[in-house]
Length: 480
Image (tube, rainbow, N blue to C red; front, side, top):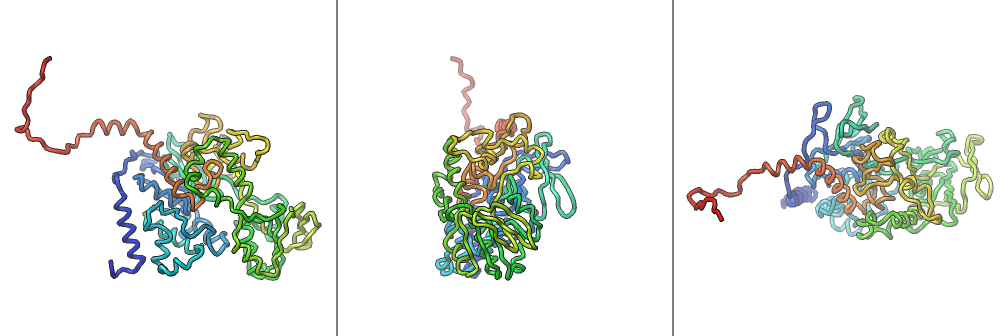
């Protein structure tokens, strides 16, 4: 051990720690044969980002071994970190834990210290996003997740009590059978990135959403308008400024949002027990939190403000948007303004039918609007479109009995926020959310196999000791 480099020593520690906490060691889920004759998966996890890898690790610790994780992206490109996440660092404090699931040797701090040294950790303010992406790949390796990259989920159907997941990869389409599916698909888990209709109607070379691949170098010397004042909008504005563009950022609000509401709810009681409150309290709390949207920290603003070409417009909704003279004319309450290019940081909305994997039963997925009517002063149609999830993160039927398969599909992405608060897409919530998810999945699997487990218990006949007959004095049956 003394001759090992620090990272190799840490990896030895991880293997030791995982072995020490491996009790009980035996897999227990009963195998089921799929219609194609092969064993069905216990769980198919869709998405190999931080949520999917943490979920797979949690299942492994619960001794659910027949698990496959798929991701549409190439290895290393899972999640936003190397693509549309355009901030230099994570916004979470460096000491937040998450995918490690409370195993100290698996924490980011342990990995960073082993790779860069203790002094580097002490000097670190925020985690570099590429380091975070590299760390997630390391967690994936150390926890032994079985992952297939370049595989896209295109549909889910019932198959005699199993879930038939149609997937597409470079070789074509195939079906994967599983008893449960976890959708760990991040921001787009139950909907799609949205553009205001007038922005969407613009030619593609004049506009983009913050989630898209943008050629920022081509914006040098151009005037760029950014719609929205959340952290992602500021990140894109900063990237355009750094590429040499003049940037105007617009928000309809009278002031920019500098409070990060998620900091107020990052405490153990909330993250563990929001889902245990009644619907009225859950709605009231999350309506407040989500109506504020995500605030940006000081360094995000400073990244923009250091450029003379940055202009921040408040109280400036886009009243109209139109193509004109090779550019875009945007009208605000102060009149028309012209840009060469526009970027919309307008987030995600729920759209079950727009998700290929959900389209076959989208009509019967229960929403919050189906289950709860808030007081008039708390009405929020956008939040009413969020899925109303069960305690195990599973979809619920709008009309019971019509599409029973939905209760075996567990949603572990941003769309779980209304039901659970920070959960599937939040680093800070993983240590509480993943155990709840795993417990829900294993509860369902165990209940389905209860009769088989009972038969095994009754048939169990492994002796723990040997008692010689010579040591036994048989008194026979005594009649009273």
